Image 1 (cartoon, rainbow, N blue to C red):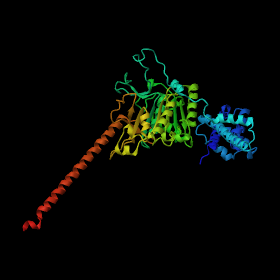
Image 2 (tube, rainbow, N blue to C red):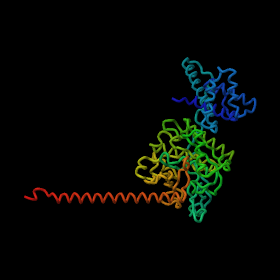
Image 3 (cartoon, helix red, strand yellow):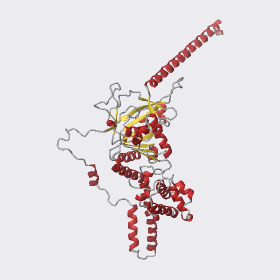
Image 4 (cartoon, rainbow, N blue to C red):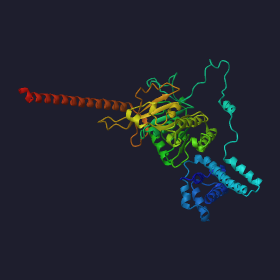
Length: 506
C-alpha cells in the first residue's frame, strides 16, 4: 500500500532538486517532514540556496557533495539521485508543499488527541495550552469554518440583469475556440453558425486505443499556441496565438516531449515556432497517484480532491501572471476520474462539475478530456456519442463530443498509410461541421512517427480508389461464388435425371 506522506515528501524534494528556485517560495520546514533524513535534506537544500545562487546544472552535485560531510543524517546518495524523478512536474510543487504541511498538522493533531485522551482518563484538568495548540492544528486540516447556507448558494447563482429589455436585447455573443472551415475554394470563415468547439464548456474526444487521440490533442494544443488550423482543417478563433494546458496522465516527461515533437513534425512546425510552443503548460502524470479530480461519496464531504484544488490554484496563478488560458486538455479521462465514474451516473456528473470549474479559469478555456469508445460500439460500427465508454452521465454532461475512428485498409491496398476519420458526434452550441461531410475528416498517421495530419487530396483519392477496387473484387468473388453454386445445382439435378429412383420403374 502506498504511503501518501512519503510520496508527497519525495515529490517536494524532487521538485526542489530539479529546480532550486522552488525553495524561495516553499513554506515547508524541517519539522514538517515525517522522515528525519528527508527533513534534514530539505533544511540542507534551503541553507545551500540561501548561501548563494545555485547553478541548475550543478545543483544536484552540490547537494550530494554537502551530504558527504555527515551521511548518517541524510538519505542514501542513490535515493537522493532518484528523488529527481519523484516529481511528475516541477509546476506542481505548490501542491506538494501544501500537502507536506497539512499531513504534518494531521500527525500533530493525532498526537495531541492522544495526549488529551490520556489526560481525560487520569481525570486531570486538560492544560489550556494543549487545547489551544489542538485547535490550531485542527484548523489546519479541517474544512473552512464557514458553511454555505441557502442565501450563499443563491448569491453565487445570481447574474446581472441588463435592464427591463433583457429579454429582447441581444444576448452576449458565444465564444468559440475553433470554427468550421468554409468551402475551401472560397476560404475564410462562415459569418453565421461558424462555431465548432465552444469556449468555457466541457468536451470529450473519444476513440479506440491506438487510433491517435493523444496525437490529435497534442495537435490541438499546438494549434492553439501557433494559430494553425486543428487537424489542418478547423481554424483557431481569430487565428491568434493562445495558451494551452496539456496534462498527459499516462506519460513521463520524456514521452510527453516525444509526443509533442512527433505531432509538431506532422504539422510542419519547426524551430521558428519554439516561442509559440513555450505557451503550452505540459504536465506529465505517469507515476503520480494523486491525479483523481473527484472524491467518492464514501470519502467525506466535498466533490473536488486536494489535487484538483491544487491544480486549479496553480493554473489560476499562472494565468494571472502570464495570461488567460484557451484550452485545458486532460488525457486520458480514466487517470483523472474517480473509481465509479464509468459505472455510476452521479459519479460521472460530479466529475463534469469539477471539469466545469476548469472551464471557468481566466479566459474561460475549452476543457477537453480524452476517453475510450466501447467495444460493442466498435463492433457495431456505432460512431455516435453513445459510443463513449462509461456512464451516460459523461456524455449527458459534456456539451461537445468528437470521435476518431480507424479506417480499415481495403484488401490489396497495403501501400496506404494508417488512416482515421474525425467527426463531431455531439454539439450543443453549434451546428455540426458541414465542411467535412457525413463520413468525417480523413486523417493520416505520419509514417515513422504516428503524428496525425489531414489527408492530402491524392491520399483521399487513393483510398477511394482502393475501396472501389476492393468492392469490385468482392463483387466478382460473389458473382463467381453464385455461378459456382448454380453450376453445382445443375450438376445435382442432372445426376438425379440420369439415375431415377428404382420405384419409378415399378
